[in-house]
Length: 391
Length: 244
Image (cartoon, rainbow over all chains, first blue to last red; front, side, top):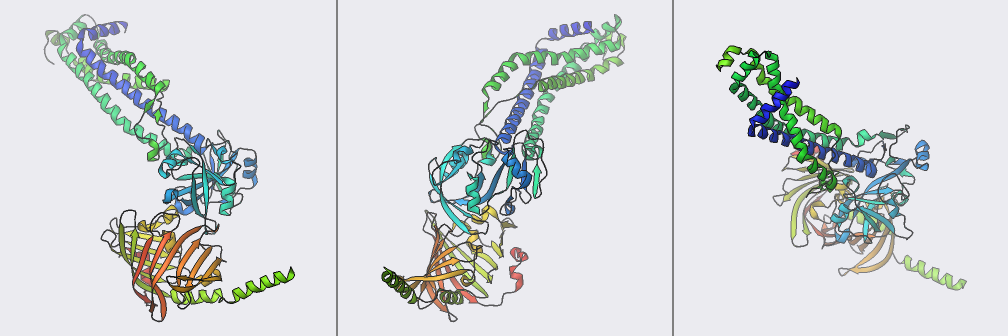
């Protein structure tokens, strides 16, 4: 085996430019696959962390009528927080959020918004609700940067908010923008206004009521509560996971094209080598090598492309990818504009599993395409091969 | 001191005694404005920041709960139909050949850029059934003497918990209307004019709506032909009629 390895390496280096062209293309495929997957993994980790800390918490309880994708349900999605859930709120393991709809009138324009009431003292979500706990007489509100941009509101601005209470009666009041927060999670920002929970409950004539209850992060137990549905993290992050999955599937096309180019080149090289090196094959057999050993030699030669490509890829790929992992990649268009949780700067994550798996896949694929044409050697007659007769 | 208070109370009560009963006025307004059903054509002129747009439509209404509107002009809106049944609203768009139900946020959006929201279109109630009324004074509106009537909803489900009407003393028709939020914030104002006598009832043929929280010059609503208590077949108020 060692002899085959040594011979293969010598033959490869002897082939010169042809080998290096194959190795360069294969190393490029290597680096791009790891880079692309690293970006997706980095995005997945960042989106998951952000969504847990800004929106999902450790899971949620939804009032049984609540469906965020069905606006018909929102006016009926509220219920008093009682019993076990009330105790959990008291212990700080749950925070209630009341959700309703309304309209704001910034600069004489009309803008439909979701009004969300949150406890200013809550510590479960990253929403800076403490900014709502002001002693002044007016109603403080906080909004995200995306909402601030679309409504052209600034900290300290006053704006008229109109809503309908639980009976359907219109009411309106001035609210003060107490703060603007920056988040990568558009589902807590776009077209939303956050008010103190108790104030919103009073405005809506819904004392002690909530629409959803967010559990503390890393929560594992969800005691059942009548009238409330438990939504665990798998459910709450399902949309994000599906986006990542579809992006990964899309990325497979890119990998497929790159791999095909590289493997086709190796396959072609192998076919050419076996055709041109028939005398050499005949000589190996004449000198005592079995046909299987010769097949192994040619297969090793082909597979060595992947080894060289790994080394070459490491030479330029490690510094390049490490630089991106440290500095991140900024995208000209913000994902939050499209309702996707995505930071302005993505930091790719290259896990050891990703690197090992990529190397293994490329090695195996290269070995297969190297072995495929080498099988022909097993059917060669050594005497004809020695004479260089085409078989 | 007691004498002073007595004089004050007497003068206040005598001042209110000069005014007619608020409920009587509401009853007369309802007699003029409400009918079991009606069919009318209308023109809505929406004044935007730069230009104005005109939209023409034909509407069939039955009581407070059912209404069907078909847009006739401009060509872009032609064939768009709107059906209101109770507190639900559907819109049919001929360009997409689809019917969508308007709900939630969308109900608060303005109708084709006007000062009326879809929610406003869904409010059409007899005043007497939902409000208490007190006449608080007399003022002139558009040169006509009017009673100023303050309405307070006794029904907590009414969208506008407070209304203020300027009611023509002679014709018992409001010439101006203000709609208030529960907090007392003025939300909308409408001015009614071109009052005509149609089949023995006074009816305003022009209404200018203004959303007081929004910039703009408001929306004019001009009624063309109107028929009261005409026979309207039941199928008109069906979802199937939207696609016809």
